[in-house]
Amino acid sequence: MSDVDSHIVAVARFLPRTVVEGPGERTAIWVQGCSIRCPGCFNPQMWSVRGGALFSVEKLMSQVVAAGTEGLTLLGGEPFDQAAALAVVAAGVRAAGRSVMTFTGFTLDELSAAGEAGREDVAALLASTDLLVAGPFLADQIDTRRPWVGSRNQEFVALTDRYAALLDNLDQVHDRVEVNVDASGRLSVSGWADLDTLDALLTGVEARPVR
Ligand code: SF4
Image 1 (spheres, protein in one colour):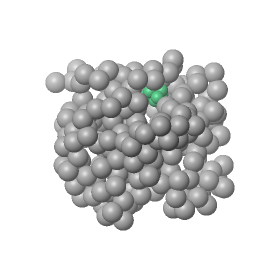
Image 2: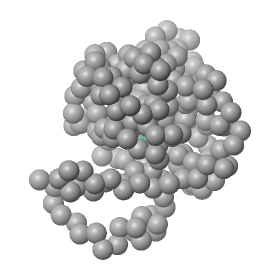
Image 3: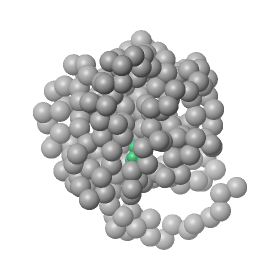
């Protein structure tokens, strides 16, 4: 939980609309930088604090609201390593009537303890999150039953009533994979699937260097 600039967010990826990163249609922000570094993480390119694009909180907030989705999903990378700035973004998104879902590699106990110890940034991001998914990714505990999470230790926590009922029916929500193609023809995959499934899905797709 580093304590970084409260006005700037380092963003690894911004996806205006997705249906595979939480309930409903959402805008997803993968942040750049993760201090946790779980073995087997699917996004090790997002560990370094170098890289990504820098956005002001105002610009990020306005882009999320302009996307017109049900809400924002924060993932990464580690959102609580940039808690101060993301708390501002999340609060603004909520003020516009949208929901906020935050993934973290920290446990709820660790975050609560930090908040109680005076980390106002951590407490603020928790206070602006409706649905928290907490805990590190454990590669020997792959979760094939619940949607959106990677491993069975990860905990869904309803911090507001907005998605509390959903947590009683998670078994009925299935993981999905989404393939996005941008205007330049660049392809990206979102969501959760095992490597065999991804291989089958992408067989025949020609790999081209990114310019
Ligand atoms: S917390 Fe998330 S981004 Fe960080 S190493 Fe673990 S799985 Fe990867």
